[in-house]
Image (cartoon, rainbow, N blue to C red; front, side, top):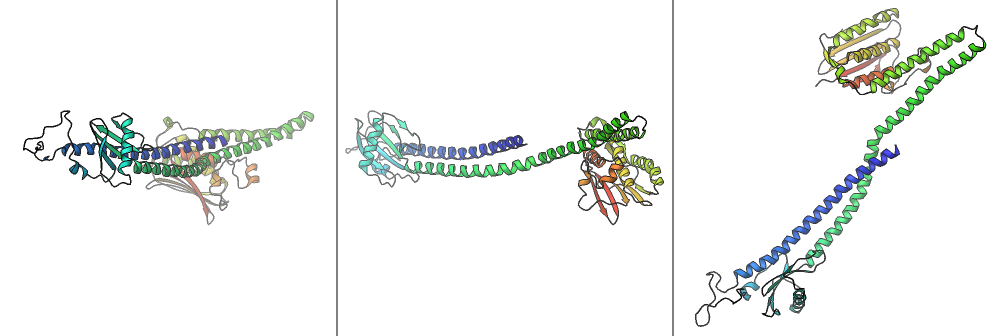
Amino acid sequence: MKKLKKKVFLVIFLILTLVATGAVALYNIQLYQQEQVMVERALNSAFEFGMKNSFNDKDDNTLPPKADGELEAPPENGEPEFNREAFGNMRFLDSTVYTVCLTEDGAVDFIINHSPSESTEEDIDAVATALLAENCDSKIGNLYTEPYAYSRQGNTLVIVENSETNALLRRTLLVSLLLWLVAVAVIVLLALLLTRWIARPVAESFDKQKQFIADASHELKTPLAVIIASADALESNPAEAKWLENIKSESDRMSKLIADLLELAKSESVNDKEQYAEGNLSKLVEKATLTFESVMFEKGIALEDSIDEGILLNMNSYKIQQLLSILLDNAVKHSEPGGQITVSLKKEKDIILKVTNRGEGIPAGEEEKIFERFYRADESRNRNENRYGLGLAIAKNICAAHRAEISAKSENGLTTFKVVFKQK
């Protein structure tokens, strides 16, 4: 049982932990990609705006005129020149962006700051010089650690400061890790609770199995002890016939117990649906009551029945006959002399079978226990009658196989067993 609980716990823990880890990782990846797109957009926007505002007369898409009225020819290298005044008015709300215009030999000519920043022009000059020394056209880098992203086209270098992005991503990652740790703690607690919930039916079944083995062993040990003792006595005194009677009596008890155990095992096994067929339940109930009518007559017990005709049920006829026999036999055994047994079969929303007797009732609080294996309210009486408390356990298994529910209650001297066959 401990191994089962451990495995169930590990499976639940791993599944939930993977889900939590995936959620945290996905959120951080999406945020990182979003910030990366914003940096790329800032770099591209700076160049696009610069191209549109390369010349003073950008609306007419013409070259700016010289002092003598002639058009200014574009630079020989084909690269546009920025309109510093127009380009300097460009603002970025989400990023801190600098445009560095370079001289022909690649030195810093002038710097345009597009965003409010604490950095001075000398600071940016130093940064631009360091970035140019990397001899790379474009670089965004790791947004968790890289302080700057940049891109160069011709004599223009656009720099995006990543300090706010670095801080946001690091802060989010830290918060995510803390939340992940809290989630893992919650997962451990939840896994423990789910493990207990899942393992409880198995543990109960395991305990019942151990109790079943102990009870069966106890029941078999008593007649075996009598048989062995009687055989020893018979060996020393062959003339005594009572030893043979004892052996026969206890052998019959063992045979009855073993038969009941085998029947219980069959009722708990997987049902063979091929043995199920639609049959007339009304006729089966009538036949069962007629079978017990003579037994009831001998004990002075009156029989009253109320059976609707033509009730059909998809069933294993043999098992249903066995169920009826168990309920009727139980009613006869616990009826008072001169009492009455009532059998009722009705079809409403579901098919309802009731067997009611007047006499010995079920002790309060034992209504569920009577369906357990080896349950006996009166040990001495049941032992004398070779009854082992397996009949109602078999009946319950038969009902479960037919999607039916069985229950019992005692009230005002009447004990009623009710079977409800669920209909689609």
